[in-house]
Length: 390
Image (cartoon, rainbow, N blue to C red; front, side, top):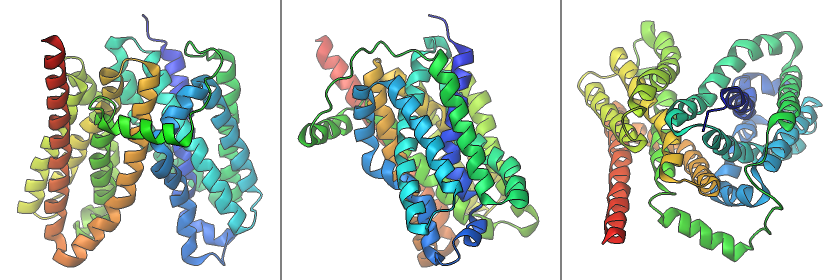
């Protein structure tokens, strides 16, 4: 099998549109009061509602996408995202805007389940580490692009112009992919399971050491990454604050695409993930010994970059079929949203209680837990394999 690199890059480009469903609001959040001056603190829902869908329906989405058809779901999600962005550009009443954001969460969830599944299936085994590490950069790259291109657009034409640009981007990829993307060997979609069957499959996924491992690892990664980037700035030396915070996401991507890809050529993805967690724990020891040391923060970003790519690469490594990969990607979406949701408030509460010392201690404990859960699930897989061979 040969890797279809042009199509992989197209799918990654579509993934940038999915990440921009967050970025188009987060990056210009301080401009939203101009559209909705009466919203007040409720404006925060404009960001969180997209993630709330994944938090509640992540695993269910993995099951439903596999049943409904990956190509069909992907194209519908792209067209839906385009229409929703266009409607948001009309500046509807705030309640209607929130409803559109909730629906956009459905589009986003479908995309982050279908896209990495397609990328894995289009990649030769030797290239999956590279292609899925590339996929793992989609959030950071999209936020950087929206910050670089979207903010000037908003400054000149207003927030609705950014929403329209996003709508055009999503529609363009929907048009192109509708011509070049073939189904993953699917015929007529299967009947969708009932609520009881969905819940049973939900339990089965999280009980499986193969299906659940990427998601559980992703929970601890997202908890730590988002929390650190949110609470760290006030503790950094003022002269270093801007460049450290700008460099950390970029270094994470750099580490993922260079050292991470190199390690994946001769190490299983799960081992690379565990290595990333343990190296990150060492940087927490450094940050405990030398509070808010800029170099330690950069080292942390480099270590977390190893988890970023290998987390996605572990999905096809542990799960061979497209349906199983969709279920594992759904679990990753759900656990990622849970980590994003819990990380910052738990970290803020810990800092309020114990001060700076809570940062290296809590984050270090969560990183150790991430390595520990992977080691425990690897033990379960090995024990099951040993039992099957006897």
